[in-house]
Amino acid sequence: MSASTEQVLSRLSHRQRVHVNSTSTLVADVDKAAAAIDRRHARKHAEQAPRERKPGVTPLRGDDQRDLVLSPWELLAAFARASTLARQGRGRGLAEHWQGLKYCQALSTGANGYLALTEEGQSPELSYRAMQARELGRAFGLAAAERTVQNRFPEHVVSTLDAEAVLLAAFARSGPRPSLGARPRPDFFIEAWHPGEPSHVFAVTVNGNHQVATKRTGKADRSAFQQLARGSERAEQFHLAEWNTTPCLLMSTELVASEGIAVNALQTPGEGLIPARPATGRTSADALLSERNPTYVGAVRRPRTPGRRDEVGDGFLIPRKDVGWYGQLLARTGAAGQLAFAGAGPEIAQYLTDRQGHKHYKLRTFAGSSSVRDARHKIGSTWFVGTDQVFRLNQTRVEAFSGMAEELYGLLVEGEVEAYRRRVYDLRGSLPSGTTAPDWGPASFGRDGTAMALRILLK
Image (cartoon, rainbow, N blue to C red; front, side, top):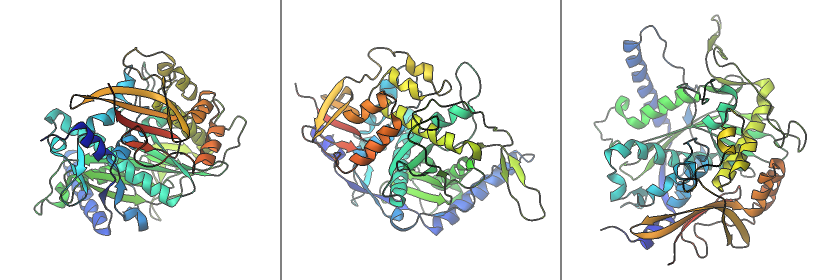
């Protein structure tokens, strides 16, 4: 029997445990899957060397290995925040903002007390199964990755950015619609920042699958292990300043694991350091981004054992001289994503280069399908401005709201990224928190001043 709308919203706001698997055994199993991938590659493409993978892969450590504890709505909101610049076309309000809404009925508490797929979640139409694995896999992987970065830098604010949206600024191929082509790359970047201090950047890969693994499932055939091995290949394609200095987080979510949904997580070392920026001037995040064209072909030099020549390969390498510029790029792309999350229109374009879609966002999108910043709600003592969407859940009209604290939104509209970051840091302890809000049902509040909430729409 289907749950009522009230029950669905209640489930979405209830925090539950999600198993995190990160052990030395997992590292060994992924190595076996990687070796099998290389053998298959050698049979099919004997003339080509297999793709490089990140060296030094290890389990997470300490509290990062603990189970996640979060509500399904916090999970879906994390995915929404990271996806607002996914370039889905003119209908971006529906296509990007509300991707998570289709999973409102997909998650609940399993028999063992862990978060699991509901009956509806376990039987999607075949054509949507891959989409569910990709999107929910990303949501869980991002939640684990963000928790990991926040644990390591508790006094910093964590921002998640779509890697393609960032890399387009420097590496887009020319054409009527700039793209990165099929070049392998990480899925997201996570920046841990503190005003006036250097930032730390992590490259993140995330995947999901519906495989029901049994004792007879070989290591080489286990989807999660294969996904982590492939994720290591994609992570190895990005480097900040020089080879192997950027920390990476590799995630694969098993949506129908025996213990409920499980996130398999690994890491690689590195500092990923971006120097502190001045609050004003041409190198601050308030300044227009200058154009950069780093080399992709033959850009990465990988040192080999003594007596052998270094190997040169392709990759997304940000040269050391451009690391400060890359920090500006992250801050400005993050500002664009937050404005898009709040339903801003042409104001988003000021933060994006032509390659990132400046013209796309400068134009008004089609009425009825675009998100519009025309909603304002007070939650606690904070006014939030943003956009809303009304949809039906079990024939009941439900309102979804996403937005930002009004004061912070105003700073970004005026192009004051550095002031926004300072103010966010000052407000960290006073912004709303929790999984619900007065007059609303499930709610999610980011440390960056964003909010996303649901409620039944009164007649």
